[in-house]
Length: 190
Image 1 (cartoon, rainbow, N blue to C red):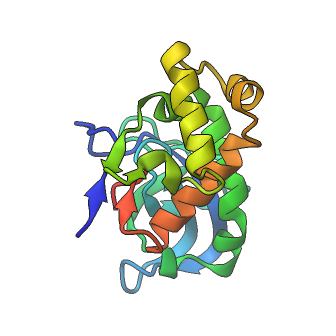
Image 2: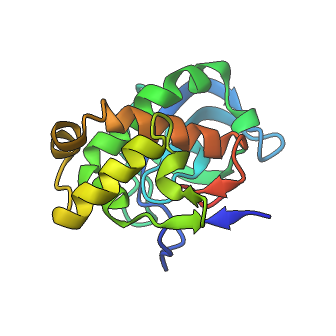
């Protein structure tokens, strides 16, 4: 049984992605016989792992935010499809935590809102507890503080409850969800 706790979105396609790995002379793992400059990336909105065919003679670096929407492509030819976590290169796996942290910080309000909105999953388990580093004590502190006043930033969260580096904790949780280590999805729609 899979549980999805992320807000539903009517948009089906990613507009932007963050590069995890760039293979200038790569082979697609999705489309047989497809070769060329291949990117492995993660979509900004739905956190989908993607394989992308890039324009020849372009270069990319890990963590770079690139436009991939149908009307906004300059450095890519096409999105080849979705990847599973196991299909990521070793380089992509080594970069994903840092790239996710950057992505979470770039979209801070969206992720702070999770701390303001997440609800219990069962009578004994709150969705906040699924984020690494948040146990019952932090969960109760978050709930008490958000009842007084909603959190407005990661700094606000850190100062009011003492939770260290929320962006990194969220990034770790996203990796757990993408890699299949968790059957409950807070941030991804796997």
